[in-house]
Image (tube, helix red, strand yellow):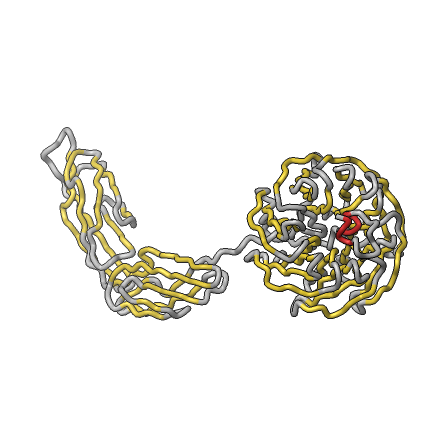
Amino acid sequence: MEEMKSDETHGEHTLIAVLGITTLVFLILVGVASAAPFAYIANMESNNVSVIDTDTNTVTATVNVGTYPVGVAVNSDGTKVYVTNHYDNTVSVIDTATNAVIATVPVGRWPEGVAVNPAGTDVYVANNDDNTVSVIDTATNAVIATVPVGREPEGVAVAPDGTKVYVVNTDDTVSVINTGTNTIIATIPVDGFPVGVAVSSDGKKVYVASGGNCTVIDTATNTVTATVPVGSNPSYGVAVNPAGTKVYVTNVFDDDVSVIDTDTKTVIATVPVGWSPHGVAVTADGTKVYVVNGGHDNVSVIDTNTNTVTTTINVGTGPVSLGQFIGPQQAQPVPLVANFSANPTEGKAPLKVTFTDESTELPTKWKWTFGDGSKSFLQNPTHKYSKAGVYTVSLTVKNAKGSNTVTKTDYIKVVTKPVAAFSASPTSGKTPLTVEFTDGSTGIPTKWKWSFGDGTISREQNPEHQYLQEGKYKVTLTVSNVAGCNTIKKTNYIKVTTNTRPSIYSENK
């Protein structure tokens, strides 16, 4: 890989120096319903990006980009991915909804590190051969500023408040850029060929992978406060978990990842991974670390609870994917749900009913069916029912997310004055006699009052009643609805006898 710069003054650098790039742009954690985020792996030799679903750990898409893609950054809402194309001197912008490149932005020579500010408005690109940082306006996808930094800038990271950008330079410095003025406000000396950089979630610490160490910088004073030995030189990628308690550093020649406790500033675990690990990123929930193995064309997934590799995912050729290549937790798509109410839902003909759409997610189209053969395409229609009957109403709503239908069966009751009628079974027998009464009224009554002739009543539509004494019983049913009421009486309708006097009846008055 050294031939990549054989015509320049940097021929002594290894692949690691040539392709060095940032590891973290600060990832804002958003408290939303947790759909697993995606990881975007830049494959520099196959000129594409592998999209990994971190829930299933499978490649779900492959996106063609420019020549020799190296750096990756995902914006804070997970809608855009920015990929630096080393040989094309461009940045590809990927729309994550379609996994398609929607823009290609020219930048400086040999872009490598890339980071997005938390607001998603600006992208910072380290141009390794120009010794500059390009600032891209995401609204126009155009470079709006170029900031001179140190020699051969590699990694880039943005502070969580978006006010500062940290750029790692291979002249053993870190440039601090004020994002308000796009000027250098500090230059911090570090040791040993720095490459990757990450900022803690509280913005108080910056971690730099330099040589065989991880350098810790206090952002309040812009001074080095600790140097933690990790693997053999070179150390390359660095990532901080969301809680700020652990730092992960890839050691290219050792084929492992050092896990640093940020409180004690010591290595507490060393995790073997694949050949030549470069990029490293932590999921938004902090449970998994993804390590890009450039020599094996795969990605190792580390369980942060056990510090062991749980799976390996094959990707494209020559993966590097340096930067914050894992997106945030994605909001679960809120479904379009149809719903409605009506007023009134019952009345006598002709009945005028006002329907109110109560669907979620702002539908743009409506289709009502009122159950009497009529339709409406208004959001909140009024409909007149001319005939008595029970009507089922349906509403279908649509928007860009799709469509949904709700049906309310027997929802509207249009009535006339009811006419009471009923039957019973049996109508005679010995005590105790259980009789089932069946309402046969017309006109859609909504209330019922039964009198069984023995002093008891019921308000059920189809009651069951037990007679305990012999006699002849008059049964009365009164039915009503909003249109009126009606009563029917059946005298001596139920005849009850006893075993001792089967042929004698006493009329109940």
